[in-house]
Image (cartoon, helix red, strand yellow):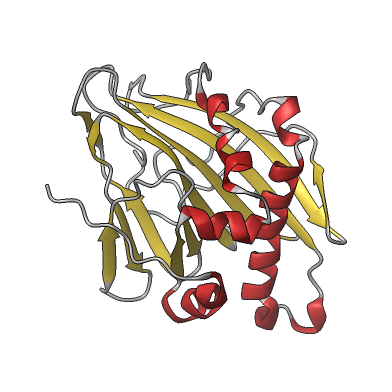
Length: 250
């Protein structure tokens, strides 16, 4: 299948694009500008995706997903690590894996203490606040709850599914999908649909540290399965979700 590159926007057009279309894509250079760190400081995080533990909760019986998960709170313009907690989604948002407490190994301590990590997540929370300012009058929301998921989808068994739950929303205010690394795979096309209509876009994220941002209330998203183009193929992403006020919970 022919791969379609996404249309990216400069930083000045990020919020207008999110407000108009419900999603926006930034190239790696713009992500570095957004995070206020040089790109080489972002790429220095890439080795963290090696040696991650396997996701033990896949209901399709697969062994293609490796992951780590940590939570953070952005409040009073400061980011802090939150106490460890299970990842939980309702069945209305995740029909496959919803309604269950899923505990994952946390991200490496040395990573989440780096200035580039703190500023990356802070930029994400500020974008959520700017996007949803009008829906929270008088600036009443000052606490943003962020979940960070490191994913590796591999093809050692022939196929890997980045979104085994299919097209979905996450039940949050903002979603960010960073392409970290894509090696020796085909497929993995990202699809974004209007949650209230029939329009949609499809493209393949391939540039390391490019970013897809999604206004979760307005769009549904999925990524198609990957297959090996050569032995050892995999797709690494960092997925951030941001929710006003509190984390998702039962």
